[in-house]
Image (cartoon, rainbow, N blue to C red; front, side, top):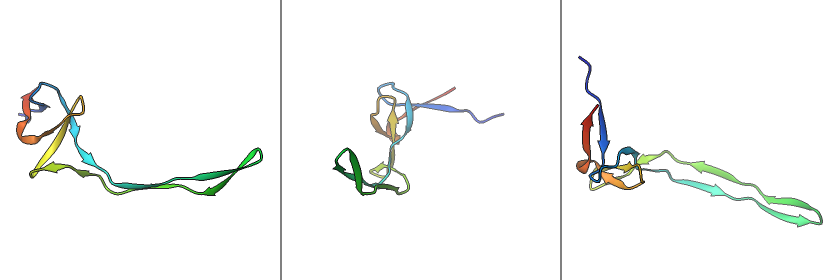
Length: 81
């Protein structure tokens, strides 16, 4: 017999769609200077991302509902389907 599958819901009835994660990063912008009808790039840009990490509050993983509200795992409602 297969293991049952579950859907998670927030206490307000909205479906849980994912985990709340934080991804730190750094972005460098480009700056240009106009020379007549042309622009010259003064500096380059780049983006660097660190690994995403799941957000926890009071030791509990946080989840997002379909409206973007965050909920701790302890208050979620699980229903088999």
